Image 1 (cartoon, rainbow over the protein chains, first blue to last red):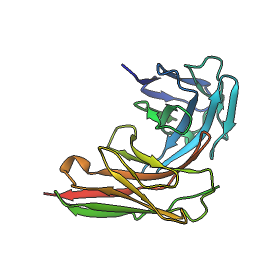
Image 2 (image 1 turned 30 degrees about the vertical axis):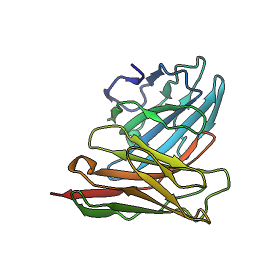
Image 3 (image 1 turned 60 degrees about the vertical axis):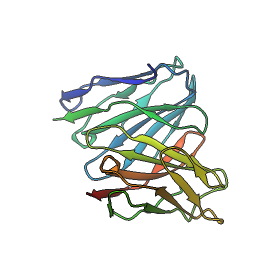
Image 4 (image 1 turned 90 degrees about the vertical axis):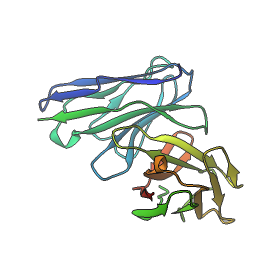
Length: 111
Length: 108
């Protein structure tokens, strides 16, 4: 089944404790993205990747890192999480200019 | 960066057509117009996309203005399952900008 998976689905952590949210897709898509969604708002793009080792900043990259060492994986790294990074995070993948397939979301709470 | 503007909410009666507008006056020539919808507690779901010409698929139609500064998503016969938040997005080589979305309510 074609899908985008994210882990963990739920995470509660404390300020400053490094964490990684994994994202994996099985559709051989070139493009992958990370978004955050805050209550009542649309999605805001954090980072995106056009292929292996090619990443670029979205609209809200501060406080986040990404890497794309393999085509199928695109982890999101929070080196020192802060409470303002409490949010719902979505990973997505697509072909060039095609529809984006979204993962189920990761709900992160930073205390 | 290009931005999109959508009405906060719209209502429709079941089995009637719905026209959801989106303004994107700062669109660039290479921006694609995408529409997604999102149900509570779920990730966005693709609806339709286009560049310049109007597009039709099994879910909806997309009408794009000649100057590309606005577009309209058309649901031909709304059903209760179409109630969702609809997002108009500009997408260009991986960079995607979401608007705040329109909450569509469908009344039986």
